[in-house]
Each structure stands twice: as C-alpha cells, then as structure tokens.
Image (cartoon, rainbow, N blue to C red; front, side):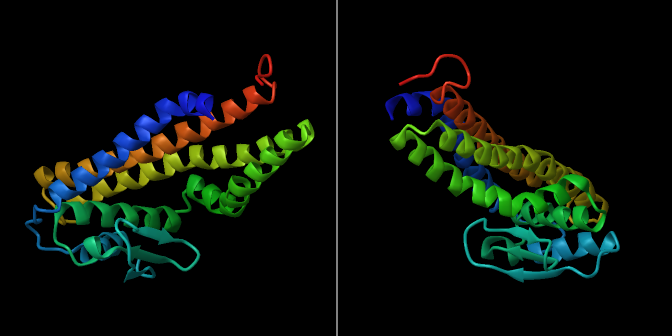
Length: 227
C-alpha cells in the first residue's frame, strides 16, 4: 500500500492543488458582479440563444459546483451558487456548461464519443478493481489482466474528457464577450475559473494513467513483476 501511495504521489499532489485552486478562484470572483447584471442562468440562456440553440432546458440542482449538461435530456443543470448569482465566477461556469450544449448541438465528435463511453467507463471503474483484487488474492493473472483491460476504458474516458472540457471553455470565453454577457476585462476573471477547473480534469487523467501503469507493473506486464 505504501508503494502505491508513493507511486501516485505526483497525481495526488496535483489533484489537491487543482481542487484548492478551483475553490479559491471561484470564491475570489464570486464576489465580483458582472456589469451586465446577468445571472448564471440568464447568461447561459443568452449564449445559447445567440447561437440559435433554443431547445435546452436550464434548471437548478443542489450541490456545490455540481453544474453539468445532460445531453440525453438536453438539460443544463446549474448549482445554487451559479444559477441565480450575478458573479463573474457564476457566469464563467454557466457559460462553460452552455458550451457543452453547443458541442451537442454542433455534433462535436469528442463529446459524442464520451457520451457513448459513459456506461463502459462506469462499469470499468468498479469492475476492474474487483477483478484485480480477486486476481491478486487468488494469484490468477488472467483475472488481473481482464481487470486492467477494463480499467483501460476508464483511462481512455479520462483522456477523451480533456478536449471536451477544453473546447467547452474555449467556446465560453469567446462567446460570452460576443454575446455582451461580460466585457473583455471581465472575461479574464471568468476565464480564470475555467482554467482552474480544467486542471482538475488534467489531474484526473494523470491519476488514471499512473494507476494503469502501477497495475501493469504489479502484474509484471511491464518489466519484472513486483511482489
């Protein structure tokens, strides 16, 4: 267990720093009100309307930064700190989620791929650990290999997520100014929240990659097997 923690330490440090940076950046700019007076929900609605997307529902959901876009129901769900807030942080997050809705409307390939991968990635995330643990306790290398294959799907999912999240933020940064939601100066503050949040996805991808490498090394599939 100790060797696992040491091996994963870089990813754990990055994940902790990314989470802290996201929370502190969101908190910092949540105290600055956008000059346009738009709330997060209004900003998302305007951004989508300006792009000719009018079939997306926008509703409030509980939780801190639980914001997400559900392509299956075309619903953009915003947390309380985003939905009704007029802060630059709220507008940045809301427009980012609207960016996902725009990806869906324009058939952005990485988003479509990620959506298809969701069930397999969820199953692989839990099923892989069960198989790897069983294989380890019973010395069944076949089970370990199958678990690693399943976990590889989770790793691929985390990698596909990176361009999806980056593109949504890129669209948001460009369009929130064009739509008159924020000024160019305010866009830097709203964009800072999105940049910090993107680091959490980078940390998740690094964590998944290092976990895969660790399992491969432990199974002796990369060099000499470690006991």
